[in-house]
Length: 349
Image (tube, rainbow, N blue to C red):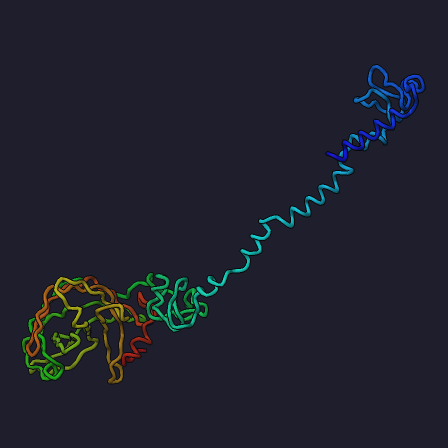
């Protein structure tokens, strides 16, 4: 504003030095003369409102247009303001983390799961823990960045698969449990274990044929169980027995096992094949004189009562839900063939 004021003051001096009597020398409407009453001048001139005289439009542009001299000042100000703008300095400092943040970053692969990591290299979980849509039969491993799980080995769960048949729900009591496998093999209580009716029975259609559990010609069923230091094992075997009690083994047979630690009165246990199930149930057949797994069972088993003491025969009462029967390759957990074979079983072909 100071420059504009000096220019205006100089113009006034120039106009005042035009002669002794400016009004006599200058013609109204001409340059240096008085403006017309309506504040206009001749062509190329305009009226200066401050002193009511006519001046050239070019000269007046310097007076009315402050941008001529102000642009330099503004540009100077803008350069200074950009140099001193604290926001620019803040942006650059944000883009570079301080030393503390670098030191606090977690390191994948150091053997310790740290803040911000989902897992650590070498960790693994069952696939169903990562996503319930995966089968529990395989494992997911920690990825290379420790921010998630590698599910390349996971398979989709087949929970929608339908059982080929089912055992009805029922309650059964084993009044005599053999203490140990050797006692079981000696059949000390066999006469009390022979039944005319089976505990588990079903009719199954496979490959266009009907299979019955037990064999429909079987007339005697041996239902027994034993326990050892870690587990309880149950067997349902069936036979053709003639008048002289000459018996021939009839397949298939039913077997299940449960961890002894899980057998607590009132507990409901899951029946299946993977380690997540407390009870494993398999149905075995005989092909070429070799046992093989024909079907596997899924359901629940409730422990009604259990009495097992070291060195003594025990008893066990249980109630099962409806138990679905599946091919080992198509169960609610997916393909369980590898699990069974790893446990030493042969799968029926």
